[in-house]
Image (cartoon, rainbow, N blue to C red; front, side, top):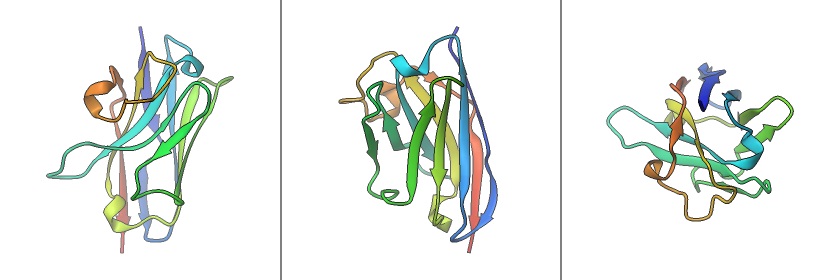
Length: 125
């Protein structure tokens, strides 16, 4: 049974940093396309970053140069390092997985089959 559990959210001032973690169980994250999504109040869930089994990464334009997605296969854990945070980054952040090695054409939330419960990130100005 695939399970994902996020941690590391919190409150931070603009310009600060946070590192989110997503512990996976029931499968090896190295063989799946993994992604981070976020959902702000009143808005649709949107993709933030994805990492394929070959470590190829993709980022939303809004976070390029500020966020880094990575994984530790030995710990079976996905990460999202967030720097230079802005108030508009405030949202619930979710990790997600799809049992495909490539993330090609996997952009929308509906493309991912497994989800964590989410962790709140709040950035104050």
